[in-house]
Image 1 (cartoon, rainbow, N blue to C red):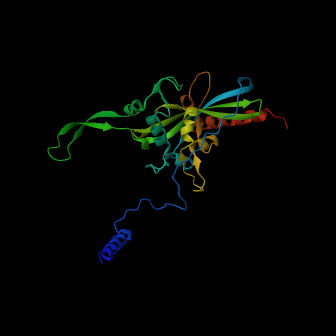
Image 2: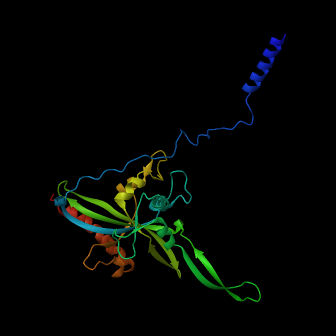
Image 3: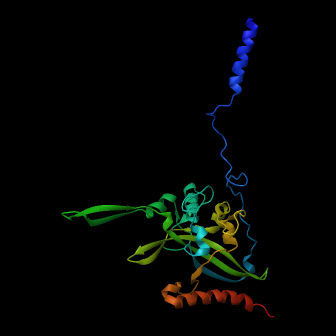
Length: 282
């Protein structure tokens, strides 16, 4: 009788143990999409082709501006808040500076890569303390002194400067281009006028390992993953030239303004195209 009672007690406990609990937690999150995706892009940069100094028959340095407010360039600016591996261009750069994957270079005196800067040096330069005298909105409407702290705002980065070298490779008989450096630019509003404020230069070949793993939005197909490195490699952006190498080392805005400056930028672009065409006979 005792054996039967013991067996029944064991069966009851086993049944209770096998009964699913309503308070059981789900260890796996629901699948957010057609298939399981960890959001990572483990791509490597496309290697540069070999280049000898003797093969460079002609070379021209060009500086251009990519404005994130243009429709084609909006994927550089968004999203405002990171979503997994999908981040804005400036957020990717700042995160890489913080982890030491990319080195920032001072832009105060030159656009060469001479004086390295740390992440905190970059942020502190954009942190400003403004002393203002304001008036109270209620009687007796007296004035008072206040201090306004301005911190670095990635959303204020609206442009990107590109320094690149165009050259003709006589070994391959083609005109080619290599991006040398990138410079994020903040647009300040000074009395209703837009004033560009460059932040720092980064050496593009060093940044390619980071950019090759960072996704950029593809407006035509969500299934096709594109990276920032691929966008720069395929030149899938809109830009305009603001400087070419010249004996005076001056920008277009220093000797032309308005529509004349636009025509000058277009002339420089056409000269690059016409130079290659003039090398051939048909």
